[in-house]
Image 1 (cartoon, rainbow, N blue to C red):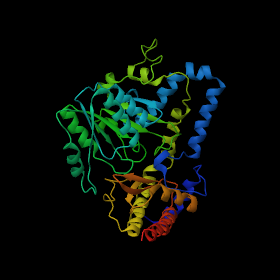
Image 2: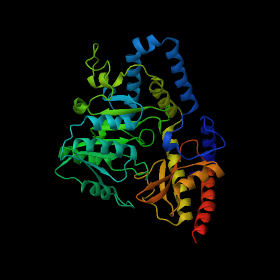
Image 3: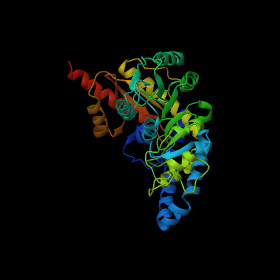
Image 4: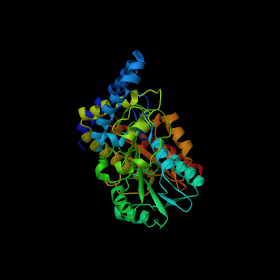
Length: 397
C-alpha cells in the first residue's frame, strides 16, 4: 500500500472517532468504536424519545423499527422480516439455544475455537436437556479451507442435531468456511447456528446466499454502531422453532404484523431503542467514507503487523495472511508468558490497548485494525513488545 496515501487517509478518519488521542487503540474487535457522526445520530434519537416517550415507544415504535430493519436487511442481504434487533450476538445465540428441541442423546457440534460466552450457553442448555456439547478440534496452523471443513465435519455423528460455528473466531481471529459447512449440514438435516459477531462491517455478508438457518451478529463491532446493537437472523422456514427470551405484548399479539417472528421478539416493553435506530447512520457512514477501500487498507496494515510481529517472535503464524483467513483482525502466537500481565503493561506503560488471548494453553496477541489506525500504531506495538518480551525472556533464564 502506498504509504503517502495511507498517511493521508488515516488521520482524517481518526478525527471522526471519539477515541482518546493518548491511547494506541488496537482492540476494535472487543467492543468496536463509534464514529462521531453515528454517535450524534444516536443521541438525537435518545432526545427524540424523551421529548415524547408515549408517541415514540407507542405510536411510532413499529414503523421506526421496521425502517431500521429494512436498512440493515439491505446491507446484510436478508429480508427485514427475517431479522430482529437484540443487544448482542450472545443474546441471539441464547434465543436459539433455548428454543431448539434438544433432548437426551442429541449432540451439538462446535469447534474448539468458539467464544467462551457462547460455549457456556450451549453447555448450560445441553446439561439441562441431557444433550451433548461436542467441541471438535481444528488443528493449527491452517492451510486450506478444505482442511478446516473436513476437520469439523469429521465430528458429525448420527446424533448430531446442531452445528454451531463462529464465522470469524474470537480468540484466534480466523475466518471459517461457513458456506460449505452449512451446505453439508442442510443436506444432512442438521440445523446450523452461526456466531457472526465479528462479521458485519469486516467481511462481505449476504445471509440469503450463505445458506445458514440461524445467525447471531453484532453491529456495534465492525459496523461501528452504538453499543448494545446486535441482531438475530432466522431463515423463514425455521422461525417457528424460536421462542422469545422475554414474553411480552408480541406474544399472541393483539395487533399482529406480517411476521410472527418479529412480533414475538421485537417488542419487550420499555427500553431504549436509539442504538438500533442508529444502525442506518452507521451504514451511511461506511458508504460515505468508501469503507470497502478502507477495509482493504486495513487488511494491508494487518499483514504489516503480521510480518513485524512474526519477525520479532520467530513464531509461525496460524494461517496464511490472505483474505481467505483474515480481514481486519489477526491473532499471532506469542512465546509463553503471563498474558494478563503483558496486556496490562502494554496499556499502563505504553498506552497501547490490545488483548492477549488464550487458546488451548497458548497465548496470542490479537491485533485489530480499523480505519482510524495508522502504521505508527503497529510500530509502537512492536517496539513495546520487543522490550517487554525481552524482559520476560531474561527473567526466565
